[in-house]
Length: 183
Image 1 (cartoon, rainbow, N blue to C red):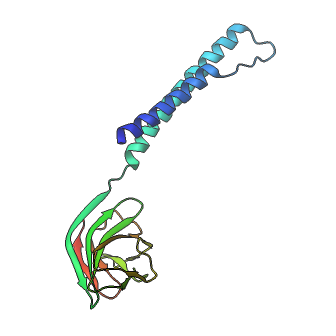
Image 2: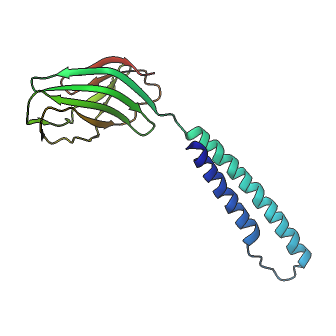
Image 3: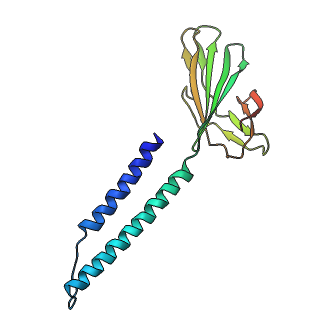
């Protein structure tokens, strides 16, 4: 995937530079001879090619430095049990634009309600900064679950800083996990 993206970027830059070098329109000023036009065109084409090579090099460096690795942390199903459900945290996905918690819920009886709550957060243990939930695939409004089957869902949080090494994950009133080393 990375090679395809890099190849696409390089192809676009190469095609763009070729079209500028060959398809540019030449306009002649009064009193300019053909040899002067040819020389200025060649200088312009050479300058354009050098400029495009510099842009291409800059694009490659930018692409290489901007790619940040997405990390997946598998957990041994840290859980919280209530009188009506068992809530479990299966994994944490750390990416440059968001942090995703993959959870699952198993109701203990028929027709129980489920939802995420707005007071759930991830806390950076070293700084004490809390990152509150932004989005949930099961939503924030109560909905009834039929049966007692397990349902997986994702909760989205803001991205954690790259220097975050240890977190605690809260369900709002209790912790799923405390002092989890993530890096």
